Image 1 (cartoon, rainbow, N blue to C red):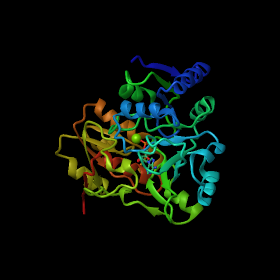
Image 2 (tube, rainbow, N blue to C red; image 1 turned 180 degrees about the vertical axis):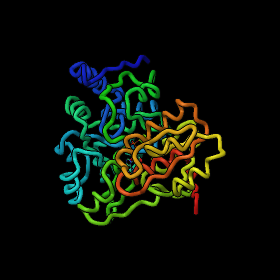
Image 3 (cartoon, rainbow, N blue to C red; image 1 turned 60 degrees about the vertical axis):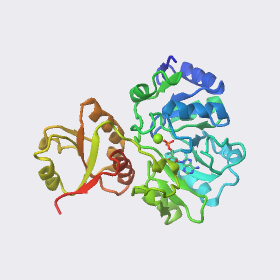
Image 4 (cartoon, protein in one colour; image 1 turned 90 degrees about the horizontal axis):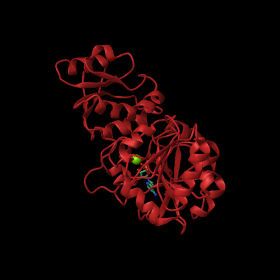
Length: 339
Ligand code: AMP
Ligand code: MG
């Protein structure tokens, strides 16, 4: 399949028209959002949704997020809208927040991975919203990477993974946030954080009070353990290189890697301590790390890195989302130095 590429920043009308024509005829189109690029299809079209799973090589039981461009679209998609969802929508939509509710009969089971719930988000990116409004249907869209690879934050990385697999990639430039949305379930008694992301736990709790944090956010699921968020049980975000996350001080880290033939993933300004180093943001700024983390994982592969030791982010604010992605990219290979 030939994969066409259109830059929506310079060729807007063409981008919107081609995206609409393809999506409404049951095809899959890569679109920019403020979090990462998404692989979008008409959420009501079961056959189109099936093509997303094929293009990504995604396991069928890993559900997709349904993207809307206005609140009125939510009504038909869910059984009921919990009060807390209304409060959260008011505060954080449009934005990097996904909320899980009981699904309505209109959501095909391919979208929900066979669950009776559905994940919904209203993206903030004007390009994503324009594409959804122009198509007049909600779009089911996971991240636009091959399953298991780091999520793409630039169209060139979508092209790397999806060339020949989908008919169209819309370029909207670099994603503003760089990690995926925060996923919260509002189905059980208490809201539960299933995946940290662009809206921080602190921001959420300042609006609706304490919520539960799913065990899979910070820990590896043991064999046979059920995942509240099916995506959490799969190998994820992994570059070709072998990554190890190293907790502890910079001093301890330097000591640990000094005789090793390796690459180092570090914070801005620390590069001078190492032979082969790449920085993924400022040490005290989770937002800057989020913006760089997936790119830097792909850049390490471009640099030919085989063994990588990564400095561990602080878990505060956006750091929690960065840590969640980094430990998965490392296959939960985590060590501590300098104790
Ligand atoms: P991605 O599409 O790559 O951003 O991943 C979406 C994430 O949301 C995955 O971890 C999914 O498992 C999770 N997800 C989507 N829908 C649901 C749902 N109905 N219940 C629980 N988790 C969900
Ligand atoms: Mg993904």
